[in-house]
Image (cartoon, rainbow, N blue to C red; front, side, top):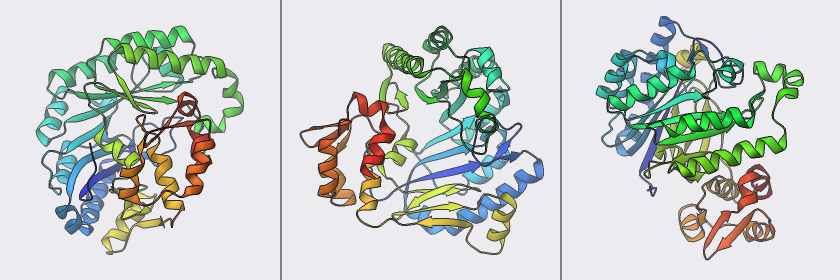
Length: 372
C-alpha cells in the first residue's frame, strides 16, 4: 500500500516467554502474572506520552511481537487496544501454537485482531526438537485450522531453514505440508547464531552439523520454487504472500513508514529519528512512572547517510525502488550512490526503477554494505 505522511504503525514488544529459544536474541523474561501487570501499566503510561500523536495519525497497522505475545491475557490485550483509535488497521499478533485455545481465538477476534503470525518454524518434529520448540507439527497445523475456521483467515507462518541436521528430503516434506495449509503469508528465515544466545555459545560444535553452502542454496531455491507453485508471490527477500495479502506492518519497515515502539527494547522510527526503549521491564516502568523518557538510545542520520540507509532498506522489496517516488519522499539520492549501484553486479536499472537481480537476492547484505 502507498505510504502517506500521516500513516503510522505501532509495535508492541511483549517480552514474556515460558522458555527461551536457543536461537533467539530478543529481550525476554519468564512470564509471571505480576510481570504482566507491570508491563500493562508501563504500556498505558507510554501510550499516554504519544496520545496526541496517535490520535492525529492514520494507524495503518498494530503489531504484537516478542517474546511470546500469545502469553498475554485477553484482559491485558484489551487494556492496550482500548487506548488506541483504530478502524481498518491491520492488527497482528505473533503466537506460539502451544498457547492457543478456541476460546482465546474467539477473544482475539472480538478484540479486532485480524492477522496472526504463527511460529511454526518446521513441520519436521525431529528438527523442532533440535530448535527446542515446545510444540510439534501436528499442533501447528491444528492451530492454523482453528484460526481459519474461527474467521481469522489472514494467517502467516514462520519457516526456518539451515537448521542443524536438516537435509533436502526433510525440507521438501515441510514444504509439502505447507502446501495443504489455509495460509496467506510465509516468512522464511535461515537459522543464524546470534550473540547472547545458547546456540551462539555452542556454535563451534553446532556449526559442524549445519547444511553446507550448496545445500543451503538448494533449500532456499526449492522453497522459492514450491511457494510459487502454491500461489505465493515473493514481495520481499524473506516474505511471500497470497492474494495480495502482504504484511502492511512489515512493508512499512522497508518503505520508511514512521512507527512507534512500545515495551522494553522496542525500537521506533519517527520523524527521521531511530530510538530504542531501555531493555529492562522494571526500569522501563520506573522511568515512565516518574514521567521520564524510557529511551536509552537514539540517532538521527544526516544527509547523505540517511538517504543511503533508506535506499538500502527499500531495496529489500522485490519490485525495486521507483527513483522519482523515493526522492520525492526522502530526498535526492547522492550521485556517488547511483554510480556505485550502476557498477554493482547485484542490481539492475529498469527505466526509473532500481531493483535487485538474482545475485542481489542472494547477497543482499553485500549490496547494503556497498550503499551504506
